[in-house]
Length: 274
Image (cartoon, rainbow, N blue to C red; front, side):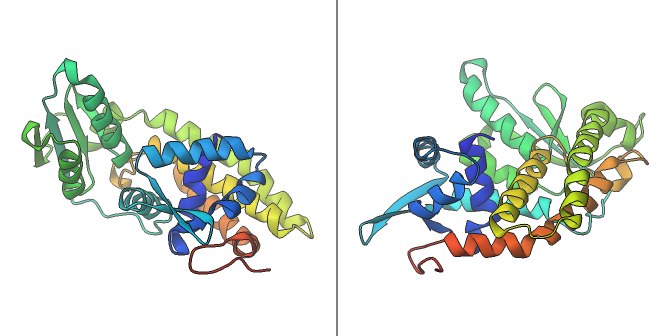
């Protein structure tokens, strides 16, 4: 795990539920559970500040880091997808985004594409991306964020063929590769869950590490799985089995992991428990 990526997981899984800020000393102790050095953590935090995900404050001679609105919004979006219990019912329509960004602005164009991919859009053709999910407002926010609203067009449309909606989805997204990634997740974490259930005396710190690793690895699907409705997925979709495994193992680890986090966590409003 890279320090910056792990920081996103810790802020998203823990800190954002406790007021969005954390003392750097608490952060260093949490990251040390994964073998992260102080220098590596501070460098990753500094990078996240420069990128606008975090801000720093000082109080009583201590440094604290807190999520910006940009950071909080990204983590809220991620959590909504990770912990969604019931899948959305599809309205049968597609959201289509087209854009015109010249080659000399490749960095801007690539950044916009990455954000579309994170939202779950897929490339139907050059400069044309589609999603079955109602993400119109989020796309317009992205266009404003990148300053390209005048170069973006957004449509809500019905697909009339000649391929079926499921065939269209299979052409836009590599569903077998995504399914294989879910199978790999199951093969890795099912034995760990079964072993943990048989084992007695897992410490709170061990549970914290395991739950964080579980969420960290599951969070990777945000970048490869477009969160398609059931109507567009193959009948045998391993993602459903992976979702169930994640939910059960997460619930089993939750109490112990939370106790450890709360024993270490200190914010500007409240000191750590001793």
